[in-house]
Image 1: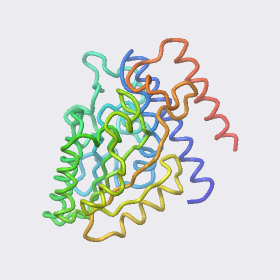
Image 2: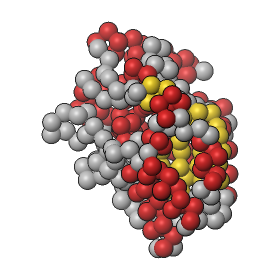
Image 3: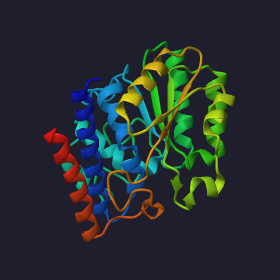
Amino acid sequence: MDAKENRQLQILACKVRMGAIEGVYRAKSGHPGGSLSAADLLTYLYFREMRVNPEHPKAENRDRFVLSKGHGAPGLYATLALKGYFPMAELKKLRHIGAMLQGHPDMKGTPGVDMSTGSLGQGFSAACGMALAGKMDRMEYRVYTLLGDGEIEEGEIWEAAMFAGHHHLDNLCAIVDSNGLQIDGPVAQVAGPAPIDEKFRAFGFDVQIIDGHDFGAMEKAMKHAKSVKDQPCAIIAQTVKGKGVSYMENQVSWHGKAPNDEQYAVAMQDLNRTLSELEAE
């Protein structure tokens, strides 16, 4: 990846963050913190890594993505809109009655959503099932799933991990958005899952730890993941909750609430400043 490509991904990620903030603000509810921490990961997946086409959202050979931490839906929706699955204007209708975009992903009502999620832990299980189906059908698609570091306190995550290791699902890539915070406080204090990497290795995963805001690191990790045979892969992405908005960064209070008018203005000011700087380079 050259500098120009890296900058373009940064621009797209900034727009994802703007879209997520726009949606949560208009809804007057939602989860901005984890959407912002995952924005770079979502951007890389949809604009660099996965074989997907918004003109054919149900193509049989497409790569699959499951947002297991379903409350991060505002970030996913902004990414899908930028990719062209539906108009950006839909983001302003987030959580509105009769609108397309629900508070959690809905595969029946939203183009580009491969699995309905929301109950923590279940998305990872669904992703494992998709990966096994791909193996059984001898398809070449890969399955990517994004977990939260708070979410992996759920027992179902580790049942699914055992399943993935047992079936040698080398077409599965689990990415942990490790931002260190969950709704009740610091992950390490609530029910600390560390060491996350060693736990996944114990279930038969190939594991990498990266900076979840570094596109070069993502590219290297994804390239390695695709070279691994007979093992599922886990990428532990170290991120900043609320990344990109000054007063939200590393603040657990922004896990699940919407900004008011003044806070919305500051957030968009922060992100517009970043966007202007990137576009001027």
